[in-house]
Length: 127
Image (cartoon, rainbow, N blue to C red; front, side):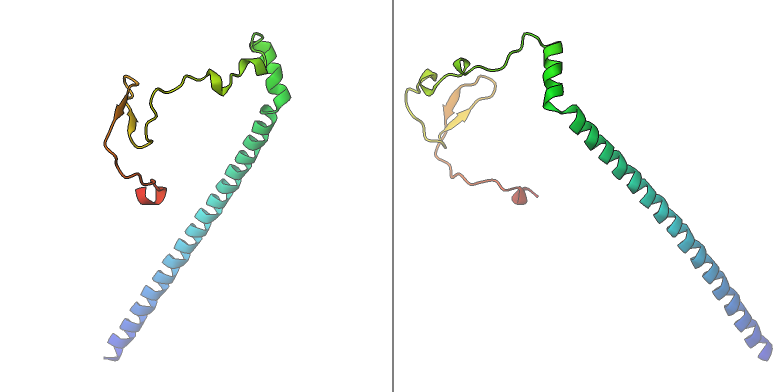
């Protein structure tokens, strides 16, 4: 009986040692994976930083103006005489209530629909 108990204790010690070795190996593997991911995150953050700096450099108004002069010489700044007033807009024959007019996208014609309750669409409702 004593031999069986010793064998059982040695077996348990061996299983515990193997489990400890396996857990240690897994923890080291996960730490290595975490280190690799942190390095990748830093590289991506640096890349984003560089891209933002490039965007700021390329989006300068004086550079865009120079490109406009170079590639679109016929394009001139908007003059105030080109902007019309409200009196230049066509007048509607009969005013429609906002919830009565719908537009047909293919023909562009307005059609009347019965009064329907209008309720705002929230992004939270759509989720």
